[in-house]
Length: 348
Image (cartoon, rainbow, N blue to C red; front, side, top):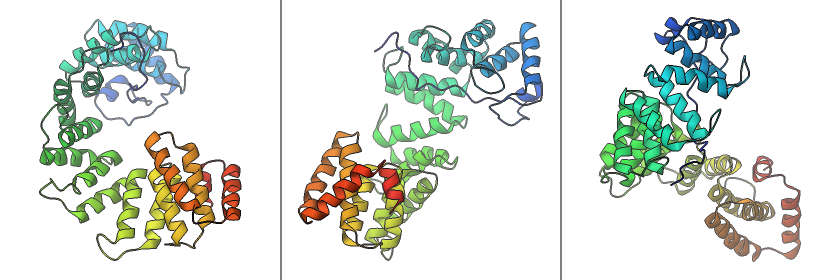
C-alpha cells in the first residue's frame, strides 16, 4: 500500500457555476457548468472572505478548474482548509481529492481518506464513493472490500450512478459479499437507467449467465444494444456476435459487420480480429483477405494486452497460411502505411 504516491484516478467534483448567487446554487435551482461567470467568482470571493464555507467551497472548486480563471490549486487548498475547519462536507471531500491527486499540496493518501470518511459520515455521496474506492484499492488505508461495498451502497442509495454500478459489479462477482445476481441486476439497472454504458453492458453479461434464473438472450441483446448506443465498444462487439450467429432471430451478416467495425474502430482488439474473419470470408461486406490480414497485423503490433496480442499473432499465422506471398506483402505494406487501427477500419 502506497503511503505517499498521488493517484489521478480520483476526480474533481462537477462545478455548479452560473451567474446566480450561492443561495440559488445551494437550493439546486441552477444547472451545472464548468465556466463560472467572473462576477459570480467575485461574489464568491467576497463571501468567502467574510467566512462563508459554502462560498469558500465554490471558490475553491472554481480555482481547481480551467475556465473563466486560471487553475490555482494552492489557493483552492487555502480556502478549503478554512471551510473544513467548519465541518463543511463538500470541502472535506474536495480537499481529500486534492490530497489524493497531489494538486496544490503534497500527496497524503492517509489524510485524504480521513477527509473522505469525515464527509462520507455526513452523507456526502461523492465522498462515500471515493472512500469506497480507497477501501477497494487499499489507497491510504487497509484494503477492505466488505466495508467498501457498504459505502458504495450508501452512495448508490442517494442516486450516485457510479456507486450503483460498483454495487452491481460487487454482487455479480462476489466482491465483499456472496454472489447475488438478483441484487446485481437491481443495482445495475439503476445505473443503466441513468444512461451508464458500463452498467448496461454488465446487465447484458448477467442475462447470458447460465447461473442466473432469469437468463435471457433477448434481454442480453437489449442491454448490449443500450450499451453500444452509449459508446461501449465491448457491447458493440457482443452485438456483432448476436447478429452473426442469429441468436435472437435471423442472422444478419451486414449488421454483424457494422457493429464489429464500430467496435474495432473504437480500439477493441477482439472486434478487430472478428472483423478480419468477416473480411476474409466476405460476410456482410465484399471479400477482402488482404484487408483482413492488414487488420490482424495492426492488431498484433498495437495491442497493449498480452492475451490480445497472442490471439492476434495466432490469427495472423492462420490467415497468412491461406494467402499468397504477394498478398502477404501487400498486407504488410498497407499495415506499414496505416496510422492506426481506427483509421484503417474507417477506410473499409
